[in-house]
Image (cartoon, rainbow, N blue to C red):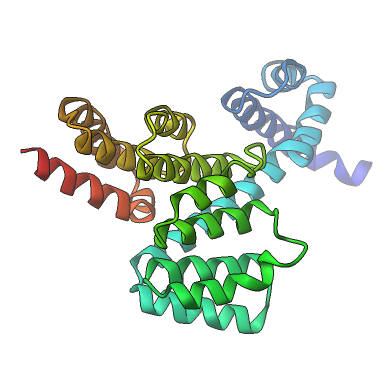
Length: 263
């Protein structure tokens, strides 16, 4: 203990700074009020319990959240980089990934890219092993298969699969499901397509629902309503980070084309 005596003021200041950082993080991320009181005592009063609380908060909340943010940012960067690649190159990369690791996600990703490139037979062949196996009701498989049905001009088949997707899986799954469902219903001239597109825009994880809905409104002769959405997307693009603009490049470009169409 005597050996630590000269360092105690430094340790005290470091822990107090940690309490301040933790308190700011807790307020910004809306943590439980217990943490805020504990960190507040450490930051403002320098109490021993507050100091211990700062260390506990750092290891239990702060560090794990920063690691999660880093992984999320890494995934976003990867998506942004992929979005800039030519489609043929993305298909080749996906084929290599599938060869290295035949997972559900890799197979579904390749099938989706092949469908987007118009290689529908290849996409169906890639997806078939999943449709006949234990993953047939997996959201990823259902979404990819529905997208392929839409490409084959089979909106009824797509709608049937989409109604089987568990929307509670994730926000991204819900966004993609409702967007595809809106397209399937629109292709069948169903009036509920309007509400489905609107639902897709609620807590959406991508700009696609807004771009798709604006296009739908224009086709319905509702250009004024479409313009409101497209103007909102333009503002979002202006305020967005470079990473987000790269990630959503396809939909921002679609919105720009629709704005030109309305002029």
